Length: 368
Image (tube, rainbow, N blue to C red; front, side, top):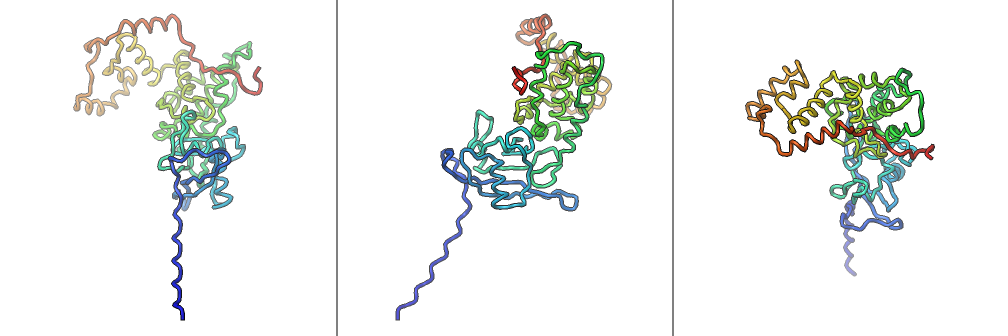
């Protein structure tokens, strides 16, 4: 009698494939797979509970992150929750954090998220895994969906419509709207707010999207209350609370450049005489010191900026003094090199001021 054959060993379960960073980018006809690590969560007992979950997704050169998420929802896990609508980077619904940056899922190709794309300012994914999470600086409702109520409340706070008043232009031509074309491209996706570092420290800050929208009305020739708008925007949580980190410029998918609009609002406020605030005083002291000395007179800069409020900074001043980080006051400081050239530049700017208005060619539906 023949001996019994030993049962064949069970095949080991294949591990989850990881993306080969050295592999060539896919062509439209060739499919590969990518690993998505998605930060999911929901509110349980009034508290947000989040966890990461990985999915392996097929893709080719035309696949966007949004299409990948839809494939996951349709084929692997129907409970995955996210917003989307137009799929054409017009509605702004699919704003989320992709590889640590605020982006539109419908505009971000999977291949770019994996391998990077310098032309689109996209860095390669770390460890070959695409990470996706909800937008920051906003309450998370479920998975990739955030509560956009606070975002729109900030927009409502700047009174987003043209107001009547004495400052409205009596004659308006098409060229006068070149100032507002750029900021009018905002689709309210919230990417700039999500990446704003000032919002992390101060949730009451109006934020880049609302302030860019405010500039759209301040620059509109039909606006009748420009100075009053600038006065309100110069108050706490307004234009002077921006830290100028440029993150909003990097995050904006439509080239609105919110920080640039904020800087134009600051220039406009000073020009309109709205200077009774710490932000405006700081800017003017900075300019005055550079024009006169070619260097900042730091010991007196805080005093001129905060005035009596400087008393609240005594503790910080003592700590700086203790570690030897208090510079010599001018004019006892060493004269900087090239001071004559610096003074000549400021003198030329006084004679021929630069037009600092935000302008862009009209490329909208009514162009031509």
